[in-house]
Length: 235
Image (cartoon, rainbow, N blue to C red):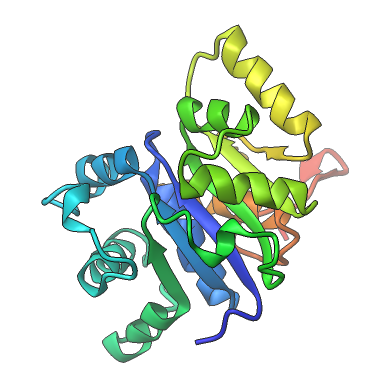
């Protein structure tokens, strides 16, 4: 395990936890170490949407809890391996060394400081409107908010992926405030020109766009190729 090149990934309490797991998988497959933080509501959403963490967030009291990490990896394996790079349990076990699970209350974490120079950026996927508002206001009440604040002040890439509809003026103002502070606002709104056949295709589209915004080269999703001579280029 090495943290020489790493990203912070926060999963908050908005719907769409599968997007966060997809990005975790993609970052690991691109050889990046991941500092994963799941908020209290995030655990609840993952329980409801992915049928994991039946004991609730209180069952994850220890940083890098092995059982919790295994539940996360099992959810990835169950939901996101229609085109698997994970071909065996032995290969799959490699993933456990490529991320740590951090308690959102652990404000003493190394990633809460700008001195963690190996951290290249951060993504909040999905981002609830509550988390977005607190980050926009510079509140550092938990590790997610503090890490985002640090990433912004260090002029690194912060990609915030809200998942809410419709949006009110408070939501929009908070997004504009974050954008003005240097964050990338990337709503979880998939395109359909790639003619998705599965949920994984839809999720991969957004995962690829997030990687693009983090400046990570990828071929996870089908890119728009344009029209030539009045026809769409299928190549």
